[in-house]
Length: 75
Image (tube, rainbow, N blue to C red; front, side, top):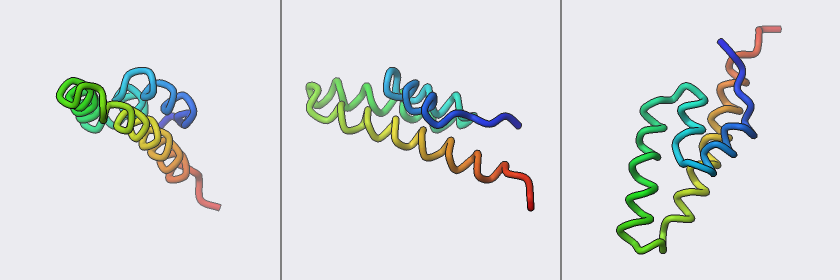
C-alpha cells in the first residue's frame, strides 16, 4: 500500500472536486464529490459551489492523513 501525500490530495480536489479522493483510493467518495459539487455550482447559480469545493479539498487532505497514519508499522 502506498502512502498518499495529503497536500497533493487537497490540491487535486481543489482543482477538480473528487479527484483528490480518487487519488487516495476512495473511488466512491470521489464520484460523490464529482457529482455533488458541480450540482451545487449549477443549481445555486454559484452561491454554494465554493463551500463544497473547499470541503472536498479538506476531506481529501484529512482522509490521506488518516490513511497514512493507519499504514504506520507497529512499534
